Image 1: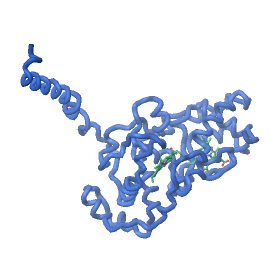
Image 2 (image 1 turned 180 degrees about the horizontal axis):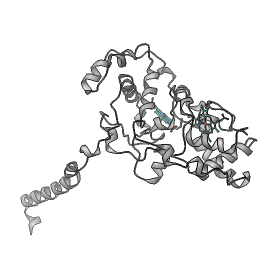
Image 3 (image 1 turned 180 degrees about the vertical axis):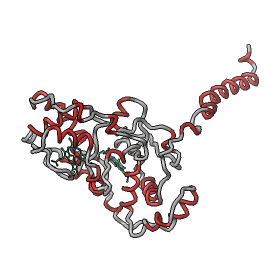
Image 4 (image 1 turned 90 degrees about the vertical axis):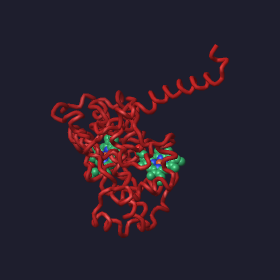
Amino acid sequence: MLEKNPVIFIILAFVVIMVGTTVTMIAPFKWINGPGDRIAEVKPYTPLQQEGRDIYMREGCNNCHSQTVRTLAADVERYGYGGGYSRSGEFVYDRPHLWGSRRTGPDLAHIGLKYPDPKGMWHHKHMENPQSVVPASNMPAYAFLNAPLDTSYSERKMKLLKFPYTQADLDELKGKSEMDAIIAYMRKLGTDLPVSKASNGPKLQDVLNNPYNDLNTVKAEALSIYAKDCASCHGVKREGTLGPSLKGSARSDADLFAIIANGIEANGMPAFSGMLDERKIWKLVTLIKLGKQDD
Ligand code: HEC
Ligand code: HEC
């Protein structure tokens, strides 16, 4: 009957759609993004990082890179780098957010955890010529960012965004290039999160003995972990590029285990204890010790 009266039909249809919209789009704001979702450790951007973020937008990096680690286990393992999946509190200072909708390249939400080097050497090399570190990369080269940074709006941006800054932060901008700014931004992403890699992962005293002493049984798996996590700094054939060659080593198995698990972050070697379990690390140790030929 009702469908024969167009006015009532339109009104009822409108009401039904509004109920759906309220339940799925408006009501959730009552209980998400509240103060409880804040993450105290997450800090606003410094002027240099904010300039880097603006360059990221200008260059359209977000057309190829997302910045949100989904709750799926595979996503957390691939892009979490010990920081887990993305929570809303991580984005409170992102205006606009840069979640992105396409992953031609990897997710960058926690990229700062992946490359902890304070000098940003890996990023520098990669930005100037991505194929020099990841030969199959289709990312364009950004060597032209080695140009002086335009800082004429830096202070105004900080004021507009209501981010705290000091004169020292502004002085830090002097003589910086656009490259420095984008690397400062990359190095910040994810690093405020309370990650305690060493305590999540295996502890050396629990695992003193390498259970694998036959290279052939572990080789295939070790090579695939190596290709994914190590090749971009130690070379596709383990010949050494940013990090030293890993074809054979005079170090003990336990030393190698400790280096891989805990990293030497000040020199650019990341800690992998939050990402690789004990067995995977031992397999890599076996590959490094016994795999002396190219594969
Ligand atoms: C045409 C798509 C494309 C564009 C545009 C692009 N990238 Fe990439 N990017 C990739 C791909 C593919 C990879 C993976 C291979 C590699 O590491 O080079 C990558 C890798 C990266 C990585 C390393 C990720 C990791 O997990 O090791 C960083 C950092 C990065 N890009 C930053 C940027 C920045 C900053 C910009 C903008 C200035 C940018 N990218 C623009 C495609 C792109
Ligand atoms: C972001 C770059 C980077 C990545 C990724 C990386 N490394 Fe390293 N690695 C380094 C650097 C740089 C050093 C040198 C540190 C130093 O000299 O203190 C190093 C040192 C090492 C050493 C000590 C070598 C020696 O004899 O002094 C080992 C072992 C090692 N890395 C293994 C690995 C393994 C295994 C992986 C993958 C799971 C890996 N690295 C991933 C950068 C990296």
